[in-house]
Image (cartoon, rainbow, N blue to C red; front, side, top):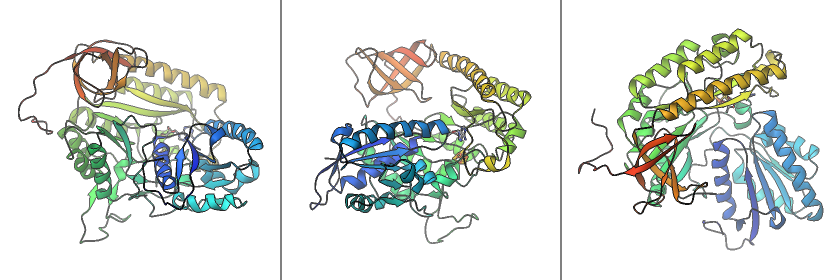
Length: 474
Ligand code: 5AD
Ligand code: SF4
């Protein structure tokens, strides 16, 4: 049984819950698991023994949806033999396609959007009486603030905490504002409590999640005015500090930043606390200002490079990763070359790289032609990947000969005699197990070698000053 209070009148049932797409979806699935645990559901990985199968889906690119359709085909073949099994689609694809999913995918019984998960128990009951059920209402308030997620596939050391939902940015290529609705922030106290509870349970790293964490705000309205003068306010920098203060032994990460909103205040908070990891995911999408304008990103190449310069100035040891789209509407060879030159200049530690995929209803679909041929998008993607592989290898190698603090996450999959963990810059570090440490603990490792994305090293003993605290004494 999942670890949650269960209504005793509920009969035991088995749930198979699969997540696709971004970290936010994986985090949402933990909320869904929590809601359904109270209804008597325990989880299974085997569709043959599941009473209910829920796919928490992604709609960001067409190939993400195709993959889910493939999985639905397979589930449908099981359902032919086992008609009492309920199949539901949750998340962004549910929100995008709504009733169409039930009409097109004949054996889908349940379609539930990202803001309607509290309604799942009712909707599942309805399906069990032979009806189809759909709830795709988006909300301006729902943050699932007080629901304690059930940690799925957890290593007991690292966990995600959702701090906000939705997105108000309207990047022209992106379907998220349509599938996840308006941006809203979660009450800071509930976030800090969740992080503290995780720490007390032995977790040592939390990642604060939002589509655009830099626009996190509590007790402010959309015009930036205080909503309730009797209550405290918070912006992202303040929230980050509150979480960092829980314990110097709790690492804090976050994702995703937006270049137009990332403030120096956040960077200074990161620099001040050793336990806030020196890693920023700052999607650029394109290195050309005209493309960025068509993408409606709200910044230019120069603005973006100024933000990179601010990170380097305030935290010289900070790793930076990004997202890139190749072949966006009207992208010329010169514009593409600007993306390559920006990548060569920044030298990202890591990048997620994609071919542009036109999404229905988006601004780009309505305004521009998807006119870069598939093979050109593909060739540009390969060029982007090529330059990224070189930067990543160079960045990883730059740690060789240095000592880094590693949070041990487990035994290396490739070698049972080695542990693996991550350093502050999120680089995986592998080292011989030894006698002194176990997963969930910190160890100082001297990196002696590197592959393109992994450091290899040995533990070293560094005496800690008796009064070692969280705050860097610069
Ligand atoms: N086509 C390709 N990539 C996309 N992304 C978002 N929408 C699209 C799209 N229509 C990428 C962006 C974003 C990441 C999460 O997915 O790079 O930052
Ligand atoms: Fe999509 Fe842009 Fe919002 Fe990110 S910031 S979720 S890319 S609209």
